[in-house]
Length: 188
Image (tube, rainbow, N blue to C red; front, side, top):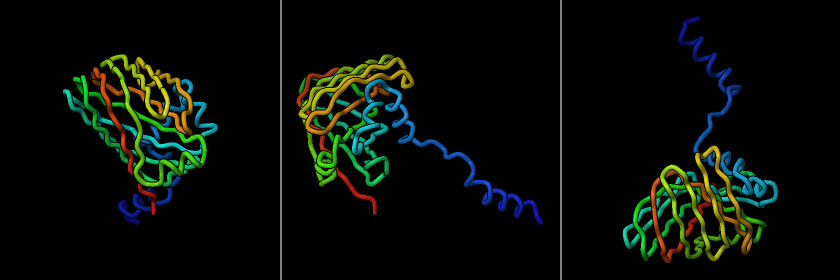
C-alpha cells in the first residue's frame, strides 16, 4: 500500500473522531454562556440570534452591519443580517458581539417573519475595557469586560426579547437616534 493511500485512508477513518474545530459562532455563544446573567437565558429561551461581529462607525451620520445565525431550541435554522443607520452626535468606530434571546415562540416568529426593526440606543465603548449600555424599544441591556473571557452582562426580557453585547474593541461616543433592521433567511 502506498504512503498516500495509507494517509488518505487514515484521514477518512479517523477524521470523524477528531474534535470539531470551533468557529466564530461557537466562540461567541461560549462567551455569552460564561458572561453573567446572559448564561441563564440559554436555559429558558426558545431561541436566539448570534452576531459574532457587528462593525459600527460614524461621524455625525453612522452605520453598522453584521451577519449572524438564528437558533431555535439550540438548532441552527436560519441566517440573519443587521443594518443600522444613526443620526446625532457620534464619533468613532467599534466592533462588538451581540446576542438576541427570544423568550417564546411568538417572539421568535416575530423576528423570523421577514424584516424586523427596533429602536434608539446610546452607548460608549472603550478600547481596552469594553462597556456598553442600551435602552431600546426592546428593553435595556448592559455589558462590561476587561477581556472577552471576563465578560459580564445584565439584562431582562422586554416584549419577548433580550439583547446582550460584548465589546470587541474600538472607541465610539454617541448620543444618537438609531434603528436596527434585521433580515432573516431560513435554511433550506
